[in-house]
Figure 1 (cartoon, rainbow, N blue to C red):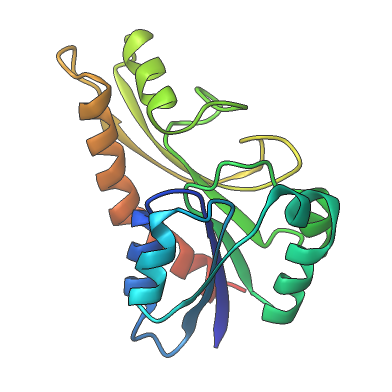
Figure 2: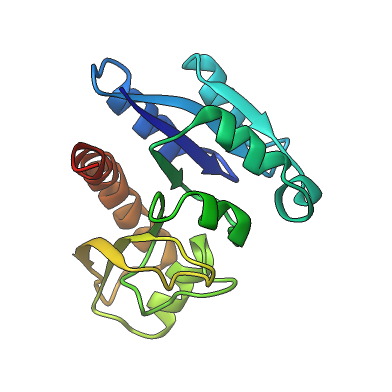
Length: 189
C-alpha cells in the first residue's frame, strides 16, 4: 500500500478530490493532511473523510524537526502540496528526495515564484493577455516553482475571460488531472 501525505493551506478542494479518488483503492492510502493554517477548511474536509489532519506553525515547520518527525513516522511514499503556500524546508526535501510534488495554477515557468499563487496567478494571466494557461504538476525543490515538471495541461484564455473565469478553468483541470498523475507516479514507485 502506497502512503500519501497532503499539505494544504486553504479550503482543501484538491486535497478532498485526492482523498476521494483513492478512498477505495487497494494500492494507495491518503494517511494524513497537514496544514499551516489552524482555521483552514481542509481540516474539516479531511476529518469528514476520516483522514488524520493536523495543523502546525512556522517554528515547527522551519526551525525544528517537528514536522519532519511527523513525516518520518508517517513514512509517506509521496508528499503532495495541494494549495500549500509556504516554501518547503530543505530538511524535509533532503529526507524525502523526489517524493514531494506540487500543483501550480499556471504553465510554469510562466507566473511562478514567490507570491504567485491562487488569484495572484490568474490576475497576472489576464493582465498579460495570455491566450492559454493551465496547470503544472512538478517536483518541489528548494526554490518556489522551479522543480522538474511532471505534467502540464492547458486551457484557452478568451479575451472576455476575467481572473475568476480563469480560476474556474484551472480548478477543472486540477480536479481532472491531479489524481490521475499522482496515481501514475505512485504506480511507478
